[in-house]
Image 1 (cartoon, helix red, strand yellow):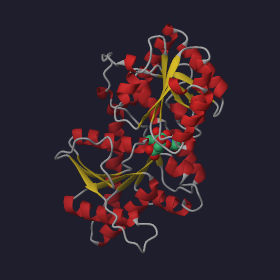
Image 2 (cartoon, protein in one colour):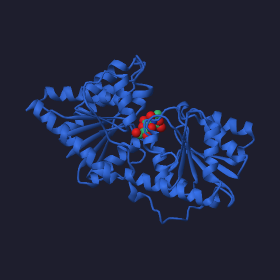
Image 3 (spheres, helix red, strand yellow):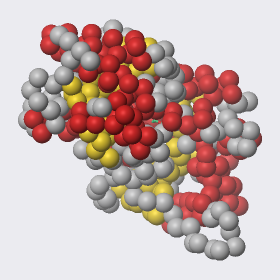
Image 4 (cartoon, protein in one colour):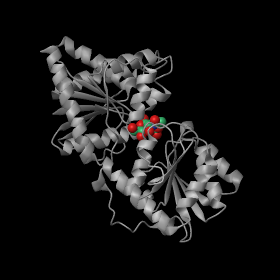
Length: 380
Ligand code: GMT
């Protein structure tokens, strides 16, 4: 099948999922076309099965806001026609499903009927999409998609609660590619980051408010009162400066390493003992799953879709949002004892392996088939 994928190309779960899905589809023989404003960060190799088409938005001084959706719709129309693309998979309702629907309608005028699958990732529903400014457009885009998928049961429930949705939503959880993680790889160069007696705690995110970055620092601060440790903070975002300031204020600057964005997440997770994700809301928590497959236990909030990934008392612990006391206590429960920590690490990897792409890819292929058939029935 020839498939066009629209996603955000930046660091962030939805872009990672879209990219890894595209690569896996190409490995299965599909022809995949990524259409977005920049080459996605995890898309390294292009081939005859993986193409990238950049959306340009010509700057025009009259426009206060440059019209990305317009440029994207036009690019979709041209690319779909030129390459004979058979199916459109957009990640994020806004603005991708919105632009995708427009492209679909333009193509219909020319007798081309393309099915559209929309995958909801969270922010497009729980944070931005429900805002009254966007709600009608988001509702419309979801209702006009041929198939809608959500990355967790919780996101599905929220979508149905917040919007007036007429179609079914299929839950297809996020995934990891197990072949990329090498359990036999032990030379993590841990000594570059910490002394032998120190535990390594890691946080990875885009440092937005929703990630509750100060909680990460406070949890670490409490852990540090009992055991020697280092905190590795990976990512960039609006809360980073404040976090650096907080570390200075608490007198733990030397114990915290801010690494910025990284394409070597697995190398960092390789030497990590614990992953902390205290988010306010999280539709899935892909970062936690990536930690788990790298044998890292998780301390997280019990919000959104996280409990579908991090299993309380098995792969880590869950606490109410903002309960940093309990999160620190739970972190210590895991970190204090080598045997306990090893058990949590093993459990984390075992549970994460259920989210292997080999189990998830057929689910996407099945919805593609369904969308293709529905669309065919509607128009032919
Ligand atoms: O919140 C982020 O870190 C970025 C955001 C995105 O759109 O990339 O992540 C959302 O999608 C991910 C992939 O499905 C999920 O793992 C994240 O939980 C979700 N973020 C939120 O719901 C806040």
